[in-house]
Length: 433
Figure (tube, rainbow, N blue to C red):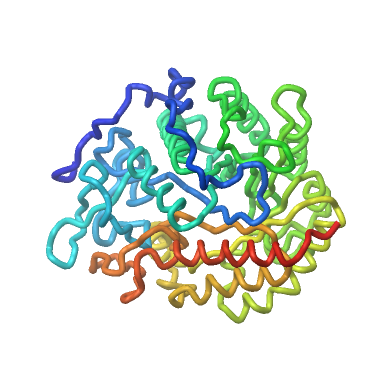
């Protein structure tokens, strides 16, 4: 254990898989919703962010060590210069004492550089306060299907969910579950998601949560990872049956389903499976959201994507499906790839002080988008986070991306500006039938 790390005073004996899952999932009574709360009944004019909530600091009580920070086997990860999986360093200027975990890295003044754990309710609440203050409407909380059979990881996911629900209520934000199917084996997708959704509905009462994001009068549930051609072992047939179950089941259905799909989903090439069944599955969904991260790599490419977005929107309207473009601030996964024995250029897709981020938003709005998804709020591993990150990260064997002179909250500010721009464009352009 790194000197100074502690088991947090808020650790609960509920952190044991599905033990007492009702209490673990159900948030405590919250204060009245703020008068400026975002409306959970619609996605029109909203800017939503992906929320990983997966960072674990050694000593935080999970026993998972440096999950998503360091390298090595679970419960024995190393997080030190030369052994890191993040490319951005979080800014903890505003964090309280209980939120800080010292590391083997050193700040410029020689003191231990600190990180946070995603299971601390105070940290989650700080993130949601930033969303409120800067104008981000809510989050798609990532829930990884491959983790749900591991008691420790399931407990972490449930604790983070509880914190998200509590803080979304306190700060008037919305939330929805996004199931990430990555890593699932063939024949396992339906059972894993169906069993988990039943628990969330029966024990967590998630569909009664007043801050749950809805779409066209139905609770919104997202499935990410449908139709990619990157060697995923589960099939489109499995995905189709799961969409139909979430949509049509008499007890647990009645949901609006959002699909996270490849960037080239409509043309069935590039990163998409060439199987026309992908389009059939998309036509069953309420919303499609193509993954543009790494596909658009410069402001110029963002501008050139307008025709593609317009064609996607046309297909979606013709099939009664809505469309949620993804925008992101930049990309870097040098340290993560190095930990996997591979190479990747640091700062592979530069942020350019926000120029890249804004170019994507401008293009999507000009093409007719009525909602936007920011990837991601807290993704430090791939360098796409818009949360406050340090412009003076630790120096040494593990390089971290920084933008000296750029305020830590630049991308939060831009997200709020983009939301205002989106809403102005919608007000000026009535929805097409």
